[in-house]
Length: 437
Image (tube, rainbow, N blue to C red; front, side):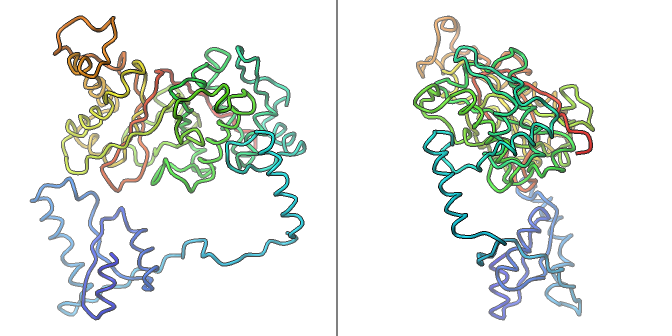
C-alpha cells in the first residue's frame, strides 16, 4: 500500500491492491502518507489459500477497477471517501479543574496502594467507599455477601471486595456484572476457588464473553483479540487477577507459586466473534438462549499461535492445530482441557466444506496426543502408560468434551490460537444485567 502511494508521489502511475479485510488499514496508511481518499483496488479475502487458477479469476475480476484507477481508456475511478482520522495525535490536552496539586494527591494514593501490596505491578484506580457502595447498589447485592472462598487459606471474596478490585482494574460500573458472573462461575461447582490458582504451572483465568453485552459494553472479539486497546477486555480480565491477589491473598513468591507464570495473569478476557462465526456461539452450545449474555471461565496457561495460511483443505488446517495442541512440553503437566480459538478465516473455510463445530472438535481430539514411543524418547512416559507398543497413540484429552472451540479474531489471515491448561473444567454463568441498564 505504502509503495503504491510513494510511486504516485514520484509521478509513476501505480495501483495498490488489497483484500477487503484490510480496507481500514489501507485508509489509515493513505492518511499517514498524506493522501486521504487514495483510491486502491480491492479483491475478496482470502488470497493465500487459493489455487493458481482461483488467483487468476480474482485478477480478472479486479482488472476493470485497476484500469479505471490508472485512467486507461478514458475511465475515471472515484476517490475513496476520506475516513475519520484516528484518535490520539500526541497533542497536549487540558482537563477542567485539574491542578498540579490534585495530580500530586493522586500520585500519593497510587504509591500508597503499591506500599500495601494491593496492585498487580501496574498503577490502579483508587477505590473509594462511596464508589464501592454505589457499585453494590447497581447490581442489587449486599456488599458483605460472600461470593467465593479459598477455604484452605481462610480467605473470601465479598461483593464489596469484588467491586473494589473492578474499580482498581479500571472497570466501569456496567462491567461489574460481568466480573461477578466470572467469579461466581469459577467457584460455583465447588463453592470455593480451587488451589490450581496457586499451582507451579502458573494458571491464569480465561474469561470468554458471549451475547449482546459484548457489543453493548465494547468487548473486543475481532482483531488483536488477545492484545491491548480495549477497556472492557483489559479491565474485566485484570479485575479477576486483582481479586485473586487481594481477596484470596495469592501474591507471587507467597501463595502464588508459579514457576514462571504467564502474561495472561495481568488480564485474560476475550469475547467470541459471533458475527463472523459460521457456528452457534459458545453460550448457546452450553445451554443459554442466544439473546442472553454469559461468561465462560477456564484455567489457562498461555496462548500458542497457530498459522496455516496456505491450505484450503479443512483436514490440513485441523491437523496443524492438533499438532500444535500436542506439543511434548504440555504432556508432563497432565491431560487437561484446551480452548481452541479458531480464527474466522479458518472457521469459515471449515464450514464452507460442511464441517460442523462438533465434527471439528471430534477431529481435533482424535489427532490430539502423541505416540508412546515419542513420549518415551522425551522421558515423559508415566508408569501407568509405560507398557505397550511404541506405535500406540495416546490421547491428551479424555474426549472431545475436553475442548472448548470458539471463533475470535479478525478475518484477515489463516491464524488460530491454542490455549493450554491443566484442567478440563469449563464453567459458565449467565450475566445478570441490572434492570434498566
